[in-house]
Length: 245
Image (cartoon, rainbow, N blue to C red; front, side, top):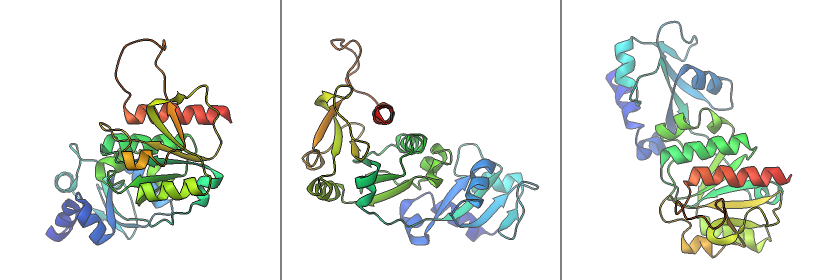
């Protein structure tokens, strides 16, 4: 293992470097094992002795793994993986349920939402350009492998949603002044917009929403927390959409 390889791994903690090299970092035997059998291309694997075999595998000592790892506690293996490129097609929302994230910035929240999408059979998430990078090491680990099955797209979200509405694709969004989620008719296809952790859905995005939803507390008149964590809210909304099917 060379100093240049160590520096490359360190640099990939930053989005700019990931975009420059077209690579992201994945750590852990389970995740890397899944990556090797997926459509993702694994460029290089650094691993402790006996973990993996193959021409792309380099065996390293525990001390070197600690130097490489981007996690607080080093794992037994680390891989450099090529970032995939996906086509964004409006037909995805016309035929299935799609999530849209408007400036969700916490890596843990984004990772959890990717896992939720995978659990509820949602194959595509459309993100605003201000949403956290899905190939941030923290996000990759938080997805627990779901990032292998869920495609994330980054685009001008208000423009994308405006075009969806023009094509009469339902655009749902969660708001405090929306209609009760459990009483509102829901379609099996369309786009569900989830907003930023602190600000919610931006005004320029909100104006494209055609059906506003509200997750009521229980009981309805109870005074408690002002809002739900965006990942928790996403889970509730996805569960209700799927329950209706």
